[in-house]
Image 1 (cartoon, helix red, strand yellow):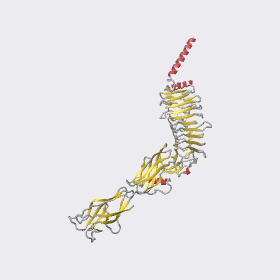
Image 2 (spheres, helix red, strand yellow):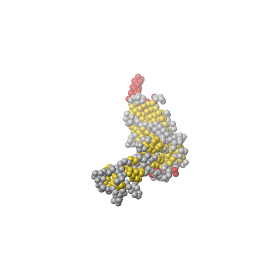
Image 3 (tube, helix red, strand yellow):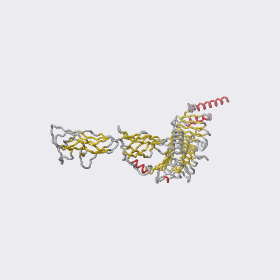
Image 4 (cartoon, rainbow, N blue to C red):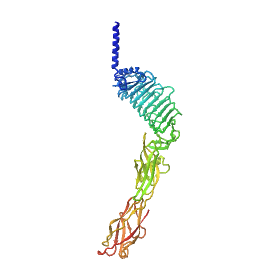
Length: 619
């Protein structure tokens, strides 16, 4: 009897052992994780963690979506990595306030990682519990969330842990979406939230309940948010408060970005305490609210301690005017020059920001301001000179060393060149900037894509050159203000081409026109005009006359030049002399020789008349 009982017990143990082994395929290592596709398989795999040391990690990989109820607790008994493999956790229960349904900590100190895992579904047909995706709220843990997607409606609160030592770290790309439903709470109830280097986290949190996005219920601790290098965080919420209860501390590393949008309320960072935001090089903070930016409590403000951030911006999308409440403060720690842009509708006003600590108040900006941006001042660099050469003719304005200060990257330079200044007073004023921007009367204008350029065939004279540098930065594209420079282009030598002879044939006493043209060409870099100052020489038998019809001279000859507009310039003329203008850079005045001979015409004789015509040019 005793032997039969022992055999029965042995068979039972063997049977239980076989059943347990089948439900947890794999060895639980990173190379050969336990593969699970049901809630019971997940429970069994996690139970294997009880035998691991604190230096070992259990690895689990989902092979299917896992549905679970309020009665299912997935107890974490070791360090664990759960690879969702693109599958989902579906809570089918209706108890949205349970603290035991789902992944459950059993003691302090575990490292828990969720990777490539989905909680809920995109149609929000599955619930959540408002104790979050890692239960056991009193235990300290290090939770890493990597490439996770969360959908919440009823019971929506992704993260909840009351232990001040628990750290939640986002890596990879994570997306959280919570919509109105029953028992919806904060996005996170806890103390420490870290966004890892190069991570992207998108949070849309619009639950019905709870007044804040973040709440640290642990005693005596700030809510600490850290954005590591290149982390990008986009938050959209409809909560009255960003953070509740404890002082808010945000540390932003190099090139990190925090973008906060509130679709229903002001951007109110905290309630009864202040907040600190520390911004490192090239980091950016952008707040867009349905109202103003600040803190709820009077006399407490958000303090931005900055070390060359790329941008801090605030925008009020509501119908109310103004931007700030409780006077947020900017405390620079470097000497980098910064600017403040303010916008009333599309009208921008730019001013230099203080190099010392200062408070942002609505009184600093035009009334009805709805947007303010604090950013490194864009400081253009440019060297401008002129270059004139006589043969061959070169007359140009040279642009060199076109560039901009860090953290900006040079893209191109816009230029406009005028004979006279287009503005009065301070060029940095918004009105004068607008005048230059909108002017269409520039003599020369264009864009240089490189850091050098030239504008050729420039007439001699004095000019005002306006420049604007287009740039890119970690936060996008932008432009400097217009700046001005003066430049003189000196005159070249006067270089004129004039024909040396003009032939004509008079076969009778009618008016004649030469077959070839008389063309004066200007090879200089300035306008010139000319006229005939004197005529000398000639055949003694032929007399140049002013008017053939009225002369009594024997063998009279009337000669003149006529241009293409029909203007005559006689060789001999009493009174005021006619002058003709010639444009620079190969500009020309083209004439034909016209005339009439009043003497006797003989087919047997040919007369050759040589005259010296002195032309007078102005320079």
